[in-house]
Length: 238
Image (cartoon, rainbow, N blue to C red; front, side, top):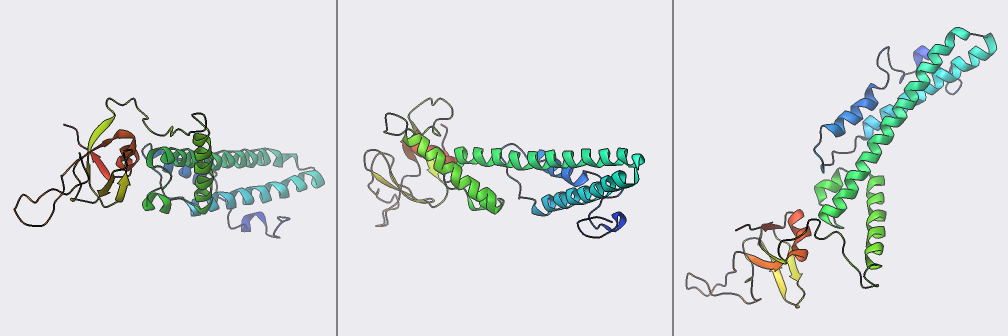
């Protein structure tokens, strides 16, 4: 009988059949390998739960055999105990690798998207991962504020050496107002953008009184990088 639940070994509902040890744990790793770098699959809560249940079943079975080995001197049970213990350790390593790899991907998303993740990315994260992300971005923000003699420095900008300080961009989705260094406020709205050189509306080319906007912006690169990564702006390469 299993000491923790009173079931016989064969009755345990989560005990895998022959040759099935660690299959669920390995599938978690394969799930990550199928995703490209930078992509975050949905958190497999059901898969993790099944692996933990299998680990509990292996522990219960081993505990029962260990007690039987001690009381009845059943040395023939020792190889099975060792096998199940190795499976326990393998499951533990796989779950740890699964969770750690997801945290590395989430950390990279902070550098790619900024402090606010897209809704579709947040949807794929567990409650614990969302909490971890909130703590990480606070720690990163505090570190960046401490740089530059207390003036602060955004180290997530210019991940690659820029060729120019200003770039031409096109707005592809509504975003709202964006203020640049000289105090100019630019309205980032799909298909209706301000002039790259001023904040003034231009006359309509059709001769009507309706104002129109220049189709591109010419903005500081550091102001645009996060918005480009988030899909708000598109870099226009001439």
